[in-house]
Length: 261
Ligand SMILES: Nc1ncnc2c1ncn2[C@@H]1O[C@H](COP(=O)(O)OP(=O)(O)O)[C@@H](O)[C@H]1O
Ligand SMILES: [Mg+2]
Image 1 (tube, rainbow, N blue to C red):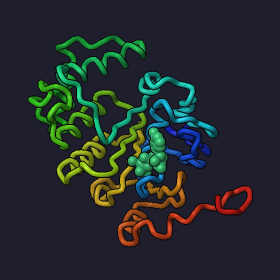
Image 2 (image 1 turned 90 degrees about the vertical axis):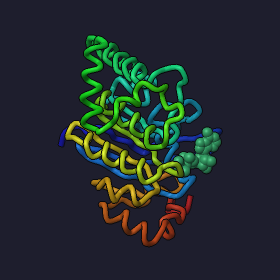
Image 3 (image 1 turned 45 degrees about the vertical axis):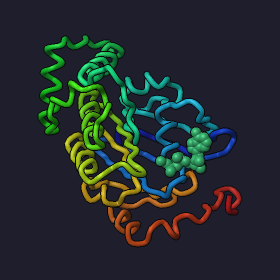
């Protein structure tokens, strides 16, 4: 089998000396969409922050490789250039910067870092129109300041468009908690389905089973107390909807001692 796009091995992370991730193992091959589900506080967002390289999250053990390269050794910028894209639950607002301008700067910064030529404004407009058309996004939105006053659905559209332009190898989308109405949910699902391809893998973090009615994941992982406690196919999401997380969050046994840790 070819090199996985993302390979997480026994990842351990502490925040303020408290261990939050307690040995995460996860492998994503090209073309795969995996879902991570789990209770609030189980560490799902911590996983996405660590992949992004956010300050304050101390990796105390384990490894992460992106297409065989050591992700944890890279700066957040280098991670993005290497093909990692993260979509967060609360996207930043940038008053005074038109969404179009933001997208152009973001795309050209990555092209430059990869040694590719920057796109001229006319070329960029052509590329963005094409991508917006494919995603059925009205380009009028792009004249407005990034995320300022955007509805939940518009924020998701801007994010999916950014993802489409940057052509990442790994997309990590943290869609937990509130704020995703059914419209926004469908936009995310549609974007994921359109952008799904053999050279890309996606990790969708959610505790909405209903998102997975629109995105059919190849694998579902249940997260509890800082690690994956069960993995299965798409049917696992349905099981979770019926049973909730009860039964999934007993303390996992320490693999070395056999005792609850
Ligand atoms: N920056 C932080 N400072 C202190 N504690 C944090 C921080 N980030 C996460 N935690 C703690 O880590 C645990 C996991 O949180 P989180 O990753 O947000 O879970 P989830 O996304 O599954 O709801 C929680 O107990 C939370 O309080
Ligand atoms: Mg979260």
